[in-house]
Image (cartoon, rainbow, N blue to C red; front, side):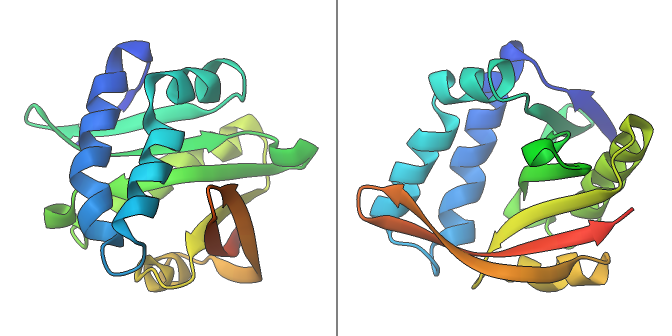
Length: 164
């Protein structure tokens, strides 16, 4: 398995992965309307361009034998703190529990340390089974927050942090 730093040329791959990952991952947590709304909000070409060009997000893809397995995005110095924020980390459902997520976290830990940040942070839906995965990797729940994302939808999240 290898990591590829994503660029604009990879937007279609990220969008294709999101189309395959989001509906089954969130089917029992969010309504189909909210899934569609959030996917458009986060994965339209203009949204991806803004994330990379204006917000300083970096995307990595995992690839093995010509197949893309998932993606992670992160930002250094989140809110002007010594924190690397993981904005997205998603793996194909058929590969969840097989080490791809850990591979991504390990990569971001290494990159964040090289950059000089001392902590990782991420948000996770309070009903997402990935919470246990993050806890096993040393993340702790710092707080709970509800984020109004418009159109009458909320993101009901835990904020989880990990010291590096």
